[in-house]
Length: 252
Picture 1 (cartoon, one colour):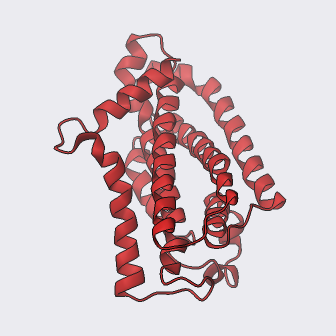
Picture 2 (tube, rainbow, N blue to C red):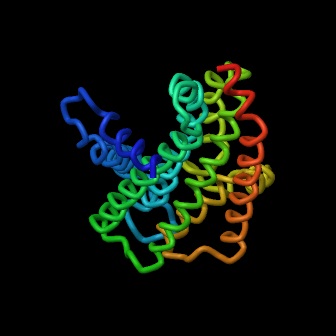
Picture 3 (cartoon, rainbow, N blue to C red):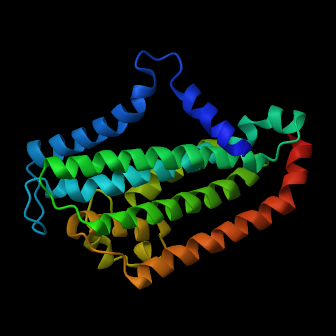
């Protein structure tokens, strides 16, 4: 499949010219885990009264943070993907969505690598790891498809409104702080429950946090919620793509 070829090329080119090269794929999530583990669990002595572990806050924080890094990266990359590949889209008869699929193939592989390192972190801090953690794979896949759907939708409007490209990082930053990743969901649940209900990423983050903290499998409600949201947005993305892609090619 052509998308896999582009994804393989993306892997090779991302860190071309750097001293450490592809080692950055492993080093980047390790640095992220270490920073939040040392800063929050050691220096700030933050320990949640929910699991008996000195690194309980890091155990809570790491899964949501790694997932958000993947989610936001996909949105930012897809948002400008049509503009970035405008010359190729106009010159060769390869559908724009092929380039976009190659992006999520790359990012899905990277988020799986990040979570593998996160499991090693759990092993080091002696936190139980059970078969329940296997639920992470399909949930991460659904999250990647959700990010793909949203990213495609945004990318279709960016050629018409160039400000979308500059606005996306701001939206991403605001979305991050409206999602219980570095703080507990109870801080929003009491006063602003709608910020949780209508925040699609919260439903994913909550599942990751409960798997990491309690080895708790996703409930049927949570699984149905994220599946329905993802499928509906994917259908919308496909519909808009078919309607708009010809006009987009004309204005590129």
